[in-house]
Amino acid sequence: QVQLVESGGGLVQAGGSLRLSCAASGGSLSTYAMGWFRQPPGKEREFVATISWRLGTTYYADSVKDRFTISRDNVKNTVYLQMNSLKPEDTAAYYCAAERYGAGGREEGKYGSWGQGTQVTVSS
Image (cartoon, rainbow, N blue to C red; front, side):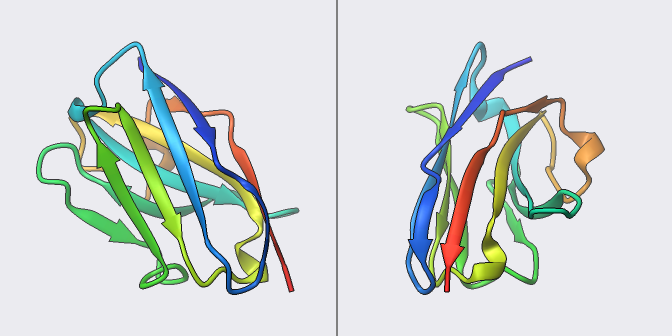
């Protein structure tokens, strides 16, 4: 399984932007569907966004649609989550996940590899 490392988290004011990165090693992300999930304080982990491996089809949670964008750079073996117009309710630990030859999606059980997470804190 591919190994994943997230970065780019931090503290930002409401309305600001951050770009999270998920770098892979031990395999080519070009053959993986990728997902971003988040776990707010005291809550369960939830789906954020996904991109399929072949066509690059994207899908977003309603709460982040039109504000977040998932993308991939197969040359750099990295997946990104561009987060704009951040809100305090976006505060969470953000995780990337990979599914080999998958369509992606919102189900955590589909993903075989997970990163360790990066913290995003949005102040009001």
